Length: 134
Image (cartoon, rainbow, N blue to C red; front, side, top):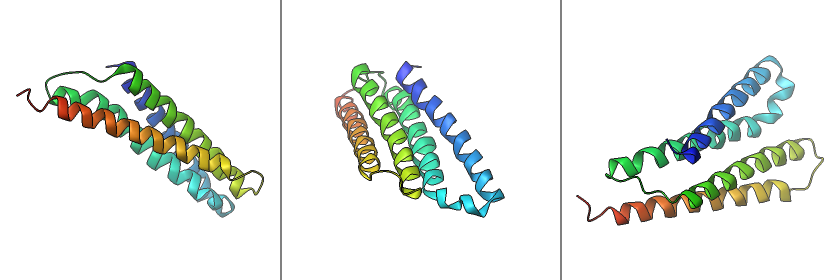
């Protein structure tokens, strides 16, 4: 498995653990339920999306009979998505505590969105290049 796919899966597993721990903490204290947006982003973007990216980068090319994912672009996607996730989580915490500027959350969302676009382009181009390879 390529390092970028493995890294996405590692971040996914860590996000699942953190999201579940936060969920347990919220179950134990209703005062912590203000962190539902953090919990949601950890599980949906951190766990689900990162797992989809990692597994997608590993499996989709193999289903098509070739393993040609551009390493540099997939690595760029990993760093955009990871930085975006961290900034989004920090932005949500700061917004909830009314201590920080909203641009942190917006920047995180923008990085995450840019990473998704990179992923879509990589996968789309891979699907197009494999069209004739049957």
